[in-house]
Length: 168
Length: 284
Image (cartoon, rainbow over all chains, first blue to last red; front, side, top):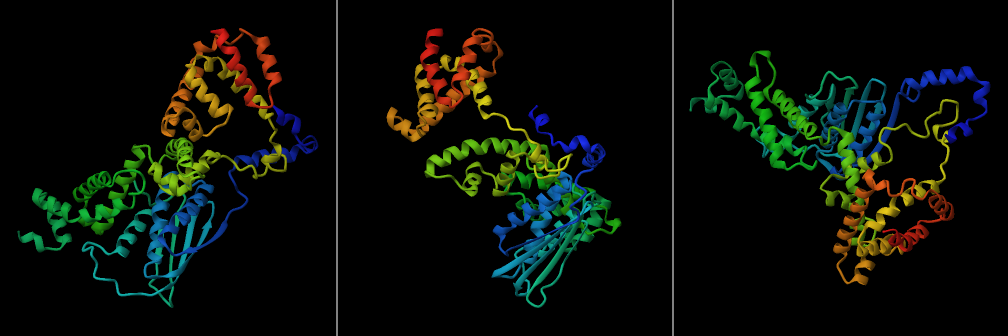
């Protein structure tokens, strides 16, 4: 193997550090956690894949299980679209992700939004917002979607890596 | 029916005790809208929407049957979880979407040929959106698969290496020509086994490096036909290369020549295949 030839010389002098490093390697990614990522996108549906991919990529960095990531895909989309309800055409959606070893959190803020009266729905069973809430309830450990206030709407979700909430 | 106007909760309570078939159907039908709306959440993943509604409906039936009003939960919440779970399991069982490795692999394998086709169609490199539309997948999925192609979940080369520096620092470099030698030696005898016409086609494409369109013009056939023929020839080659019995023709037969060839022609593919063109017929 050519890697033998290229081994840095210091490996011979610093055996203890080498051993420590080898031990540390077995524990996956302990250093850069928690991480915050800020993503600002136009508040439009075609941007949700961008948000979703960022979210799932981050979650997979801290080894979220695949099912958990699938749940997040659904949840993140619902949170974004819920917050962007009644958003004006030039509104922006500011997403802040906070990822730690044990959980994924997302804060979402859309502005400007104009709170309109919910139209008497074409869905008799459940309004759009209610359906989103049900989906979030089924997929994340905690969430909130605040009513529009001061021209903006804020939402939040949190999912634990080993989650009590999971679709079976 | 007297129950028709009664609130859902009441009728669920009634159903829980009576297990009345008609009431059951009524409750299920009333909530089909929920299934449809949830199914739409998965509609961009390459499964027909109607199938998803079917799958979701099974979830709904399970929720109506399994709902226990005495636990004090809201039925729609219970049903949403059950229906989503059913949909999710469907994707998992189908090996789609949930099991990343496999779907992503399949998709990744599809991307290459699709890019080739689209490149010829548009005369430029296609966008991810176009690839996704062609394959019938989402842009998400394509991007994900592209990422997978570069080593899904493998450690970053920028990650700290065991002895300081990064993993990338420790990577040795392999002479790229080594692999070429191997490929060429592998493919020579099998090329000879191809019919003259297919060999000519492969030469045009990979030695003269003509585009499929150019080849089509020369041979007076359609580009689609060229594409099909090439695909077939390459498939034949792959099959031949993968069949161990065919290897014996070469293995050990002419080791000296093998060495000479690889030594002589490490600079490019071309020489060897040309060589093959002149040599291989004699060996037949």
